Every structure is written in structure tokens, then in C-alpha cells.
Length: 205
Figure 1 (cartoon, rainbow, N blue to C red):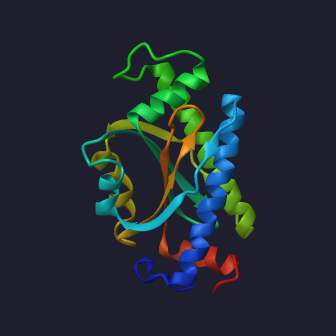
Figure 2 (figure 1 turned 180 degrees about the horizontal axis):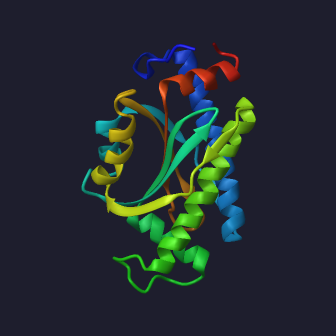
């Protein structure tokens, strides 16, 4: 199957990718609600195809400190998925999971990093499971890596790894809320052949 040029995806293909983003984010919200043991609401996700260089600005600037969970995707499709949160949102989510406020508002303890990795693993897993169910493709995520750094530095990982394939990625901005903001960003970067497999599995190719 020939690769799809992500920079030239038609509006029809993008509508399908957008729907995948909506369903995946919805399943992630359900998983998060179950994990935290409380109702979590989700606004309609903003799904965009964006150039790598513009993503940091969307998150509040390349120097914005964020928490990123990164997984490599293998199986019938190949690429990566990231879940990125501003530091404050990540701290809120961790505090809710652990049932106590953070003792170090500006730093992440080893226990908090472990909790963040588990959160990221479950909600990205829920996202990928919805993609696998919709497409009937086999998808294997790797063990997640977690990193706290400036947005520009964290985003350089998929940019370097997959930037030779396409200049754009699928960004799903998701507003998780209960009484506090826990918003984050899913970043899905399949390779060109994987985009083709996904769209063919959904009957639009």
C-alpha cells in the first residue's frame, strides 16, 4: 500500500480522523473517571492536523513546563502516541488519584511520576483500544516513558523520530474537568503507511 502524504489529507479523510479523535478521547475520559472514582466531564475535543513547529504554541509556548507520557505504537500500525499536560493540570490529576495535595508544587516526586505514568498508560491505552476496535487492527503500545520538561523539548522526540515522514501530526486537545481543570493533549503520529491502513480499515480508501 502506498504511503499517504499527511500534508495532503483530504477533508473526507480528516473528518474520519477527527471522529477517531472524538471517540478515543471519550473512552479516555471514561477510563479517567473510573480511575479517579469520580465523574469527569469532557468538552468536545478540538482535533487538528498541525505542523510540529506550531504545537508548542498551542500548549502555551515552547517554554511552558509540561508533563509528557510517550508510547511507541507497534503491530498492524506503527508510530507513537503522546499525552501531554501543562504542569498544573498534571499536578491536579495526580493529587486526585493519590488523595492528597502535592508536597512540592513545583517538583514531581518519584511517587508522583509513577502515578503520572500509570494515568498516562491507562488513558492512552483507552484511546488506542478505541482505535483498534474501530479499525479491527492489532495495536501494541510500549511501556510508557514520562518526562517533565519544556514543551519544545518534549515535542522534539516525535518530531525527530517521525518528522521525516510528515511535517504534521494529529493533535487532540481534550478538556477533562470535574471541579478543576485537568486538560491535556493527545498527539498521534502514525507513519504514512499506517494512515493508509487506518483509513482503509474504516472504508474511506
